[in-house]
Image 1 (cartoon, rainbow, N blue to C red):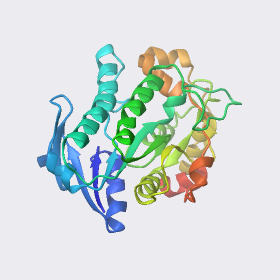
Image 2: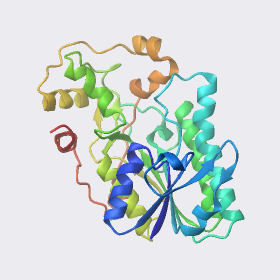
Image 3: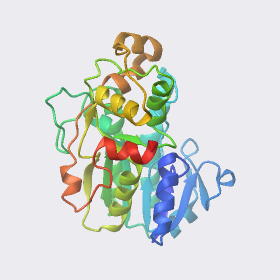
Length: 299
């Protein structure tokens, strides 16, 4: 199939492109600066409400990953506006363009985030039917998913993946978790008891591949591994792979909020998500537990 990816230059998009090509698919990216990437790419601009219509004419499947990195900068009022608009406005623009220009797109696979559910207690298990949270990230994902429903109203098969913490050597949370452990200053964050619903990048990308190829899939799926763990367990598992001790006390949430502001909720909060629905589609995890995932990534 001809597959168009927004956000293809990110660490998820790059790995997904490799896997799609290995299965014989043709991949094109939709990016802000096509001349700066090695892949075949077309331009789009959310700010200017522009999408190169040729990209849409060629594609049969749209995989929509694009969105500002939520953890790259402190959450000022303007930064929060950028995070929201890059997702909600970007998605609305794509829906409008699909309705406006002739195209062959029959399937849209749209990223969302586990932040939809907000924070959960130790006894909470969130399924796709659970109610959303009420913090900033939950509000962002609610509006993101609402705009994505426009693809469905436009007659396209829509699959939405609520992505957990992605484990990869090339980006995401893991390098940030690994660094202090390497320097013998690793410690749990906050209480250390908050859940981390995680997924190995290859399992995530293979989930996107399945969603694109499997015509029976539709609706929302939690894109997380079957064995979520708390922050303390993940920190100690990383330390075990690196042969480093973890002897320091947990970093208090108050310190993290002082350093990071509201953005600290990314690491002080968390939720335990169920992977049962995606498993019922026949999807099989290559890395179902933290030990196998960390062994593959960290050696």
